[in-house]
Amino acid sequence: LPAMTVFLAWAMRNYPMNVKVHAAITKPILSATQTIKVVNDGGNPDLAAKILAAANEDMLPALAKAMPGAMESPYFGYWLQELVWDKPDDRLKIVAVNSIMPVEGMIHVDQYRRFIGYQLAGEYRDATYGFLAVHEPHIDPVLGESVLQRLMPIWYRATKSMENADAIERKASGIQLIMQIMQGVTFDDNNGGTVNYDDLARQWMNAAASGNSVLLPGMAFPKEAIDRNPELAKVKLIEWDRFDWGNQGPNLEAHLSRKRGLDVDICGVWGVSERAVMEADKGGMGTSDAEVHSKVITCISEHWHARTCQQWDDQATGRWLAANFGNTKVKLQTVASPLADPQQTYLQSLVTTIAQGPNTGAEFLANVDQRGLLDRTETPMVSEEDAAAAQEKAKADAEKQQQAANDAKTKQLTAMKGNNPATGDVK
Image (cartoon, rainbow, N blue to C red; front, side, top):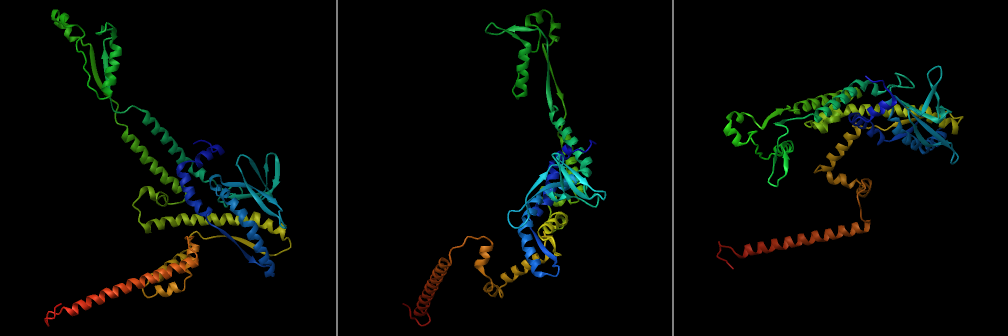
């Protein structure tokens, strides 16, 4: 296996199956939200509420900027980002977050292997100006563990397999025509020009490859010479044969089968079920089966999300508190929003059942702010005046239709009463 380098890690990061699995885990995190809560008000609820409001305003936007970079840590084991602090108003806050490539920054630790700072472009900066997201910190609290290190054997086999498949595709395949001619033989065409059989043979070969019929001369000597010496008829001017290169299709099918197997192994290294990632490719998975396999990815995503929020609090939130509220005992915690909420799913299904019930639907709608619901779902709405006018028109049209139906029924009953065969009263 090749030695792991940063440049090799980037190549492995861009391998399609790694991109697919990483996206399945991290995209829900990047589309999720975070909240901040007070875990200890320090005996001063009013001050805690003030600090919480300031933290929501200052720290959540900064965390949103840092989250995409933090999701790169599974690839490299860690991901370092520069925190730019400024004081645009009455508080010191993080105004920018910049990723530092693994080859750009040198991390510094103390004797207890704690992150204390980094060196960038020859300049040392302490940990206040950095956010270090670490993947699997229980393996190493600073460098973490790269998933790519475990993927190396599988990725190496996959790339070699693709190289072999490319070589197979360049090999000749199928049946090829072989033509042998007597060299140095020429003849004069109808225009008096001299034609070489070498050039003519190439034309015959091209015609045969195109599926056209070819008429080849059989004897090397003219008919008059053969009449004088019949043994000359055994000398052929042109002989042809065919060569079978074989079918390369089975070899390519074997490559595809091997690639599918290696993709399954890649999913296994990431810790996810290959069916959850490749269900769209494989097909045939039922809804319940898909939900079971997707729960594994959801659990991994929530774990990564919560771990990043904790590392953010340990490094950034604590320093923000110390800089702006140095004497407070208030403690804050950044909470990752759940990516899957079974209780919310149950409540939504319960509401749907009640709304569709024949005995409860009308009462349910009477308690719902329908315009608020439409606004929440971003449904285009007309003004309340236009809506009221449309309702009045619909009501008037319904009354007209009902009146027309009643008049038609009255006429029908009247006609039936006037034509009574039993009494002979027929009009």
